[in-house]
Length: 348
Image 1 (cartoon, rainbow, N blue to C red):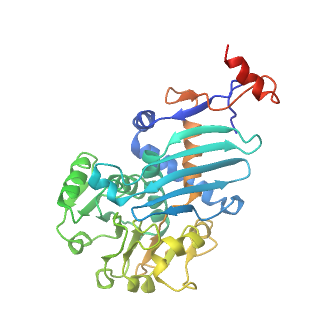
Image 2 (tube, rainbow, N blue to C red):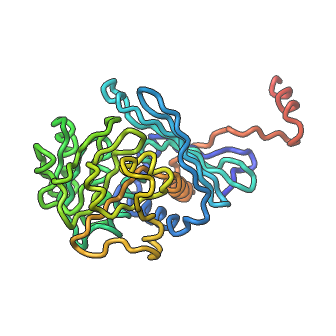
């Protein structure tokens, strides 16, 4: 762990510097890097402290804290989810995160995580699809063309070799926005007028809608054999996207069952509904995709270890760069027992 300097300054990555860092690395390269960090931490899954995120729900959204530690570093993310914000010209999701040294308790990184969460969520989706999607998958249906859609698409291209994306959103303006943003990235982009049209010929079906409700974005009869479903929109109690019948036909893979059973698609199912934890698939302790007829479903809600991986990656990548500033966040008296004396001297 890299500690703050003797002046106890903490590196801070602003939104502007995060965007500069992405462009300096290249977005597809960064998505691949993040996927490698996330997969590496999934392989260390049993080392981590794990707890469902601490959520404060209101009628208009949710505010959450997502903490974890591997025993050497501690990380948390603050994140909100307010679907109504879009209508007010605001982001649905905003976030920031902190990484600290367990030995001293001192923070070693503070960073924006609105942009970083979009990147790590997409990297996680593609890392999982690498393990679960049918071999040779090159076409994805992207249902829900909001803030996540371009990141999800580019991650599937960078990590899984995606060649075609078929877009659908109930708001045509969102589809037009996504198609415009993806026009020059080397993919075939097809705009569709119905979800049924979007899933034609797609081996990967990604659902990412924002409304906080039990919706049915994919009905049971829309999903045939031999596909991988990347369900990332259902991420809090009372918010789902898939018909329950799909879950009974699919093999369902999750990050952390105690959290997913409350927030994910499987909140629709009995408490003993069978799921497989992804870390076990990555370590080859449990089977992932067995054959070409199997329906695999990643019931993604986002877990703190993925944020920890992203924080760890940013800490490593900003060293010896100009993509951060130092913040004077920590009181650092000459005598650790004389905090009041430090305050008195500041008057002069």
